[in-house]
Image 1 (cartoon, rainbow, N blue to C red):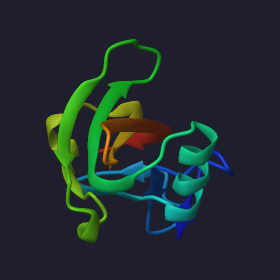
Image 2: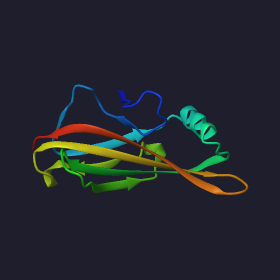
Image 3: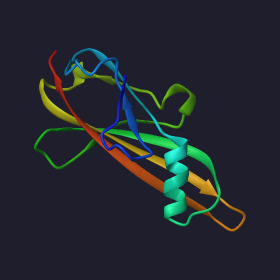
Image 4: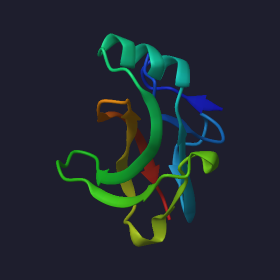
Length: 127
């Protein structure tokens, strides 16, 4: 099942096995994808021309109610849904937020531009 936090957003879009899972333990695979058509529309709105040539997705986690994010990992492997493993045994039980920060490199004959988008989801860790 695909969970999209904002309806008309090009990405990132979290991929989870089911919406019913809200408590995680052990090794969790964080995955996301993006919508190429919505990205194209967003680039047009921003008046950016060119072709997407590279993708990167950084993953962060923070305890809910705090301000600082801890980096979990980064992936540029779109064919693997930008997957990164999170070992919840390294993190205490409690309420957390996970942040997916996706960047797309867009190249034209004149220049190269990077556009980014983010998604944040709440979840519980119970080891």
